[in-house]
Amino acid sequence: MEIRMKRVAGSVLLVAFTLLFAASAGAQEKLSFSIVTGGTGGVWYPLGGAIGGVIGKYVPNTEATAEATTAAIDNMKLLTAGKAGMAFAYDYHVGWANDGKVPGLAGRHNIRMVMGFYEQPLHVVTTAATGIKNLMQLKGKRVSVGAPNSGTEEQADYVLKALGIDWNKDLKKEKLGAGESVAALKDGKIDAFFWSGAVPTAAIIDMASTPGTKMVLLPVGGKEAEAVMKGNPGVFHKSKFAKGSYASVDRDVDALAITAVLQAMDGFPAEKVYLILKAIFDHKAELAAVWKGAATLTPAMAVGQVTPDALKYLHPGAQKFFTEKGALKAPAAAKKAAVKKKESAKQTEPAKK
Image 1 (cartoon, one colour):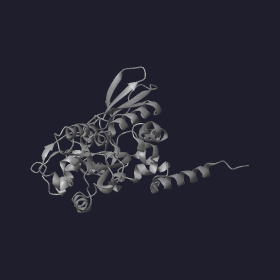
Image 2 (cartoon, one colour):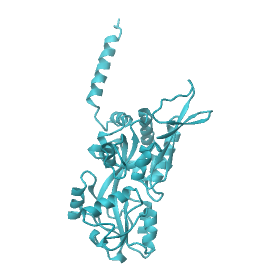
Image 3 (tube, one colour):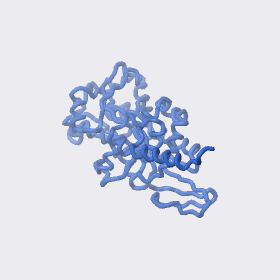
Image 4 (cartoon, one colour):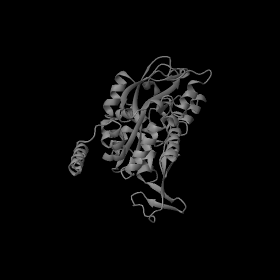
């Protein structure tokens, strides 16, 4: 990870993250890093910016800056290449990265989960004017499957392949981000698009609010959902777009979803992760200004909505924070150590007169 260690009144040094702090004794050092997010039309970019602001204000000698990217897969490439300190991705990516299964990311990588944020349903967006009513009717149509190396592109691939749709043969494929896809659909340049993002996503709100156009979310449920989940175990879970989630959604719509998480490498300082999480939960109102879900996010939700495989790779600093908050049970070894320490303290106490 590219980390900039700064003396408070000195020059900037670029050092490898795994090196010990090597500045002269007594000098204060600042940890600076990037949080890689997603496109500017999604939720991750503004949320990453808000997290960076909270870190800069409330975590001593630490600063973080959000960077726009094409999202999940791109983010993990930057994270594992040492070009970012934290990265947004999805819960299933954590285990996959450690097992060497992430598409486009060669090798095994010691990625650790910092926290989960929210369920992220896969939007498949079209308009009433296209006449498309289900996923199978996407065949022969102009469809954006997401920006290159994004989680959207990855998930669209999983869904289409599970349903027997070859996006190279059966679709007129485009690779656009959320904002670009909305613009193209409005202009009649595409017939539908995929987008994996929080509800509501700003770009989708814009699409749903377009005068004279009725936006349609295609359902992914029933046998289609079963086929996709069977073909991609551990990736999706069933969900719904609730009635009223967007202006044109007048009934609940079946969907498949994953959970958005924040990741770091195992070498990121545990105490910094602990302090970052403390700052996030102590100042949720500042995150809620860009993502309303932050107002109701609890430590229990942050670890309870991710896959068990992702939780297995929780960062040690996060393990400490969520255990202290009661969201996780203390590991047996830690409990034994605490009891032993307490007993030892009692034995060394001076006798009361």
